[in-house]
Length: 186
Image (cartoon, rainbow, N blue to C red; front, side, top):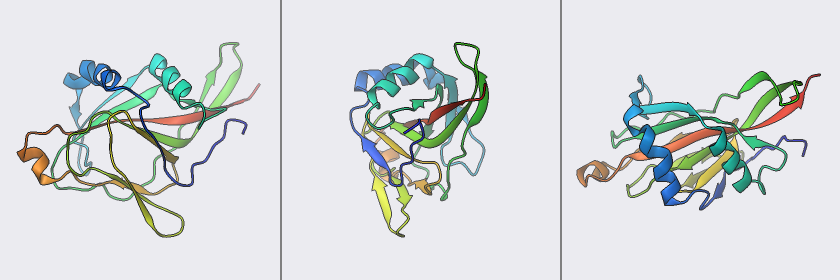
């Protein structure tokens, strides 16, 4: 595979993280969630780097991402029941130069996104994908589950149901990162 993978349809993997791990990832960052400007559907987000978490996820996803790895840059975002849905969009690829552990210059490329659902207990909030054949596919959030997909795959987050707020259920928390591969330059 040479580190390059492309998911033409979303791939859902359950139990990537345990409920305890989800809590441990979210808890220290919950106070740091900051407002996001419109037109974002996700009202708050926090950005962080965590090489240990990236290594753990790479190990747990090895059967899907052989030859690639999970990037250590993460965005934890929060979605509340505001009645808005995300517009259809694709994710921006990541390309950056860096030196590997041997001092060799490499380029890091992303081709796929990874969304990890950090909680559940709310209504709505599915991720909807437009597939090449013109149909759509819905991925329902489940705590600890993840969905991997090509960054060229058009998708959006559907709104949480209004009763989520009324019942005082939690907002939807999603951890986003990319799956990357490296190509040596020298």
